[in-house]
Structures are given as structure tokens and as C-alpha cells.
Image (cartoon, one colour):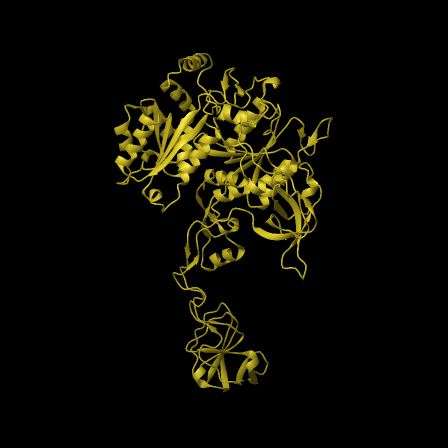
Length: 640
């Protein structure tokens, strides 16, 4: 078996294959057990455990049972007494409904409670939602098995497992009576104090990221983070990025925002019978022939004179039709018979064609009826929507709040664009490009400055950003270099959870996503690569969808269309997001995608003029390139 040694920052040495935590995942759900719903929570927990990012675990059993005490007890007893599984995670059945009986079943099985784990989970969950106070989680021990109840939702189960994970390896070591390991940890704690909430996947209470005092030679040669797909990374982000609330805004600032409630008309539109044409208001039953012109009604007036048979009133478009007129005859269908001596008034006109009742009149409420729903929540407010709101007298509207965003650059070599370059320095193009891209997409961003590749300076810059904003978008400091400190700082100083640290893609492999609680608010951090193109591409694929989700959007990803390659295209071993220009010709039903040239991640010119990212598959032994004319998926990133 593999005896690869992991070198920990605390100095301990652990075998990667030794003392793996054998884990069972029990989903408790009537609907899942009947096949009426998918067990997304259990599947997600299995993936997290097997990824070894939180604990050095391996799922050896996974099962779904209905919300029945006896079925739950039977599985827990089998796993703890017979299969002797180290860790049993249950998900579901912890709520207030009559069928939620997982805590009761767990209490009947365990011989000792572990209330500290449940308290820690609930305490940290309350920082995310006040609904955590309704949790009835039970944690405890049976023989040498640790049993932990988790919520039934995928998001809640993952969060609570993450909260409990720092204590799990030591708890299992104690239950397995591994005295050397537990004594060593107790000794370390007596010297160094409490461990970080983020622990290495091999169960030691250190972080796999380098600490401030690590030496270059002892840095890891392989990333501890599993390489996940773009789709999985996007799913994780959307799970973690929650809407941040609703606010009332004046119409002038509501353009492009997401409506938070349905809007109903308080008045009909038009509120009076309105003329559609410039002409004459007449009584239709009078037919054609001469009419005496007795009034002139411009738009905005309130006609008081009552028109009699044989009479008419000159009327403007949009003006109210006087009683008892029921038709309007356009000017073109009349001729003048008599005018005043000075020509300022028309006295008599001839109606050339007999009108019909209702002709060229907008009835009351024909556009919008009183009480009619005119806008639906979750709509993205357009200019015409704001005009519609104004037409019903609305001056404010409830919208979903837009998250406050900070953009932070990192690197000793990075200087402001207006600084004179010294040897080894480059100007900060990332921040300018990212702030512009975010602003264009409806997310104004705060400039958080440039952090040097120093632990203390990065902490200071992040603290400033956390105090002012909800989301931090950083560039640089997330790869394997000796000065790439972002993940270590987030974990060590802010007790952050790193949800992923590598993505299988080109460009953007080191992309990192983390969350943490600062003060009493949840913060999310997008750690983008430092190469300019990588930062821009990952902002399109990860940051913007996350921000849209937080802002209430229902459609968060870039528009996807099909396009034909203009030229032969070489494939990369990784899935590639290739910058291209889409254009149509008259004889083509699909756009043609023209590459912007050299796709190296440092070449900003590859973004010039690009309006799409081509989703190219990885190369295989059989397929090294795609010929011109191949149809591929294109993600639209700009106006076509």
C-alpha cells in the first residue's frame, strides 16, 4: 500500500493510508427512500469525505432509510456494533415535523452523548441563520463509533459537517484508544493553544497550508486540494452564495436590479377614455355628414362641455374623450366647411365616412386594469419596466440588495498603474480590468489596494475589505509559490473554510473559493489566479454567477450558444475556455468563432475584442485537435 508521508506544519509525520476514518452516511428521508427525490445531501457528504479536505476519511457505507425510528436504529446498530464504522453521519429528520425522529432514534442507540459537538455546530450555524435555533441535532458515542446528526439539506449538512470536522479526528483517535496520537496532540495544545478550525485532511491539527514560519524547503510539492470540475466548482459557489436581503430603492437606481415583490396597479391606464388620433370626438350614431365644432380638447385638459347630437369636439392624441362621444374620426377623414373670420377656430367640418362606436378610443383600463399585476418578482428591471412603474405612480420599488464587493491585488511585484516601474515590477492591470468587468455587470466594486506577499500586510488588507464589503475578489497568491499566502492567511487568521482550491480548467487552475464569518456576517472570498487572462476568465465563470445569485437573479451563468470554429484548433490536456470573436454571415445559421490568437494566460491581448469563451474539451489520445467547422459551445461574454 501507499506509504507516502505527509509533512505537517506542526512537525508531526502521518502516513496517508494509516488511520483513515471509516465513515458511514445515513440519509433519513421518506421521499428519498421511496425514490421520489434525489439524495443530494448524502451524495455530497460522500464526496466531501472521500476528497479528504476536512478529515482523512473514506465512506465505506451509505444508505437511505425512511423517517422511522426502528429503521434508523437498525442501521445505526449494524454500523456501530457489527461493521464497527468509526464515524456515522446522519442527514435528515432533525426538524420539528411529526416524522422527524432521527434525534430520538440516535438517543436510543448511543451510550454517551457528545453535546459539545452539537453546541459547536449550532453556535456556528447561528452566525449564518437564526433558524439554526430550531435544530435538534444529537451527537454521541456507541462503542467505538461517533454518531453525528446533520440537517437534511445539502447546504446545511455540509456546513454543519465542516463545523464539526476540527474535532472529529481526535475524537476518533480517543475512541480507538490511540494513546500515542492523543497524548501528542494534548502536548502540542499545551504549547501552541487551540488548533485552527481548518485541519489537514490527514487528521493532524495543523493546516496543510504553510504557516508564517514555514521554510521554503518544507513547502508541499503537491496541492492538498482535489482537482474539481468547473461545473462542481460553480455548484459549490451557488450553494454558498446566499441572497443578502431586500431594500426599497428609488426608480433612478433600480435599473438592472432584481424585483423583490410583485407589483400591482393602483389605478387603471388610461384612467379615462383617451383618443388614439388627432381628429374629432363624435357621436357614432350621427353617421357621416356635417358637424358643428363646439370645443377644442388638448391632451391634459378636462373637458366640461357636453357634446350634443350633430356636434363634435376637436381633440388631440391622448386627450380625454368628452361625454357622450363614443368615437374619434381622424383629421384625414374630414374636410373643413367653415372657419372663424380670423381662421383661428374651426366652426364646422364634414365627416367623410360614418364612424363606428369605439373607433380610435382607448377605453379605461385597456392598457392596465386596476389591481392587475404588472411586474413579477425576480424580474430584472429594464428601462421600460421603470417607465411602467412611473405610469402607475410608483416612485420606489423593493429590490434585492446587491452585494458590496472589494477587489484586492496581491504581489510584491505589483504596483499602481501610475507608478514608475522599477526592475522586477509590473503595473496592476488585474484590478482595473476586474473592477470594470464587475461594474459593467451591475456590481460596483471597492478598491481594496495591493497587498504585499507578507502575512501581516495581507491580513491587514483583508480585514479592511471584510469590514466594508460582503465579497472579496482577490487576484494572485493562490498557487504553489512560496509567497502564495492567501489560503494560509484565510484559514489561520480568519478561520475560513476553503471550499475548493483547484479547478480542472485552462486558464484558472489555482482558483480558490472560501467563506468565513467576520463579525456577525458571512463573507465569501474568490481567490483568482494572478495572470490577467486567468483572472478575467474565472471572474466570468465563477465570480459573476455568485454575485448574481446573491442579488436574486434566476439566471446566473453566461448565455450559452453553439458556434462553428473558423480554424483548426489544438486541444489542451485540460478543458479550455478559449477566447474568441463570434460573428455571423448572411448564409450561416450558426455564428463563426475566430480565435483571438495565442491563449497564454498572461497575454491580455487575447481578451481584446473577445465576446465569447469557447468551451473546448480536453485532448485525448485519439483527438488532439478540432478541425475548422466543428460546432462547439460558446459562452457569450460581451455584445455580439
